[in-house]
Length: 219
Image (cartoon, rainbow, N blue to C red):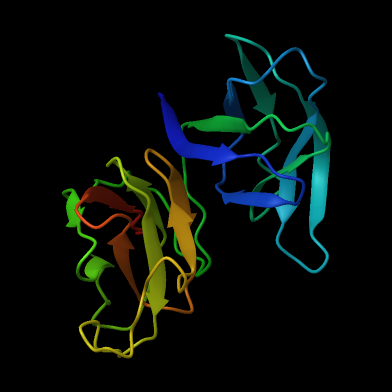
């Protein structure tokens, strides 16, 4: 019986879906320093990752300084996760930390997701060579990972095709050739099941970064 963090995510003006199942969620807010009382508004809902995205029971999400908001969604509505969209157009960066009570993580293969994930050891990432962030599964499968940049440098990531040689020059990643990027202390919930491995490289000629990948396994 505890609150478990799903990660910290930046709210934007398009739908963000955070995969998770549960009933009770808690949201904590953080803003960039230029906040000066501007009007901020967003929506939280259970979401179905369809085209277009469908939502259930949308509720207002509004910034509350030094407070958290708690939301309840009935468990009989099984969606792909929580959906968030920002409705204001201010220049304030707005991030939220999402926690779920008695957490269960959603997975797409109908297995029961009842396990608590254990984080892998920190992975040192350099600016001179590719680092394997997530190795390929021997059976060609993928599970979801929460990837965290625990260092001081921006890290660029690229998905590698199944069966690719990650040391080969054909698998490239750079500041101009990447699939997603994380600045220091940012997190990304990777649910890209169509690709198997992830490689990374950090910014700067001498700087190094560390990345932590937490795998969610399903029984």
